[in-house]
Amino acid sequence: MALSQDYTKLLPKHVAFIMDGNRRWAKKKKLPVIEGHKMGSEITKKIVAKSLKLGIKYLTFYSFSTENWNRSRSEVLKLQKLLEFYLDSEIENFKKKKINFTFIGDISRFSSVVRNKLINLKNITSDFSKLFFILALSYGSRDEIIEAVKKITKNIKKINENDISNNLMTSSFPDPDLVIRTSGEKRLSNFLLWQIAYSELYFTKTLWPDFNVTRYSLALKNYVSRKRRFGGD
Image 1: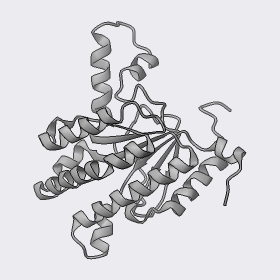
Image 2: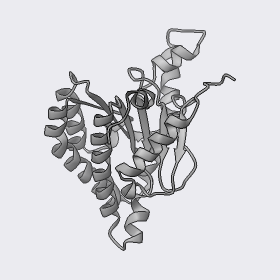
Image 3: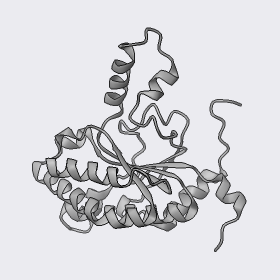
Image 4: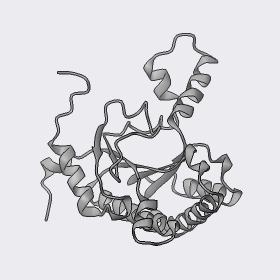
């Protein structure tokens, strides 16, 4: 069904996702944990495809937090292998669809293979602008804010909001309009704490591997129905 122009104009420009529930999905289906993450990566691809059709310009996916390093070594290694596979398999799609890929977070703890693949995909898609795909990896918002303040205090004595915003990892992107968290948890988990001060939040009990395009459309419809006040009346 074709969407009206009025509806598409009201859609968010930037949607951020806290992709929660991969492990619970796998456990529920009595599968190895990594199978949940694999299914989750397939959902990410579908969300990207749908967003391209709708003209949503920015997508940020919280893929791996700084706290996730506390998981078992085996799971972390398998996640890195899955990330390698995803990056390799998406190169042609990103080039064909003109998707700009970038990442935020401290990638220094990842293997050199993963780091090189991240940087390579970022470089080869740097001129694209059909959709901006931002992957949050080894990311923690508090660390990001601390690092921004460190940069600022070298040159500025009086700090304002713009100084902080301009020194964050996301400085070249608009703040998210909508944050979607799956799996029923209702917290932000150290994700874009500065940037989502006035974002609309959408929580669903659906586990990420079950968060299909239909459920994404419901979240967007809910967003469109809201009146954003940005702290005003």
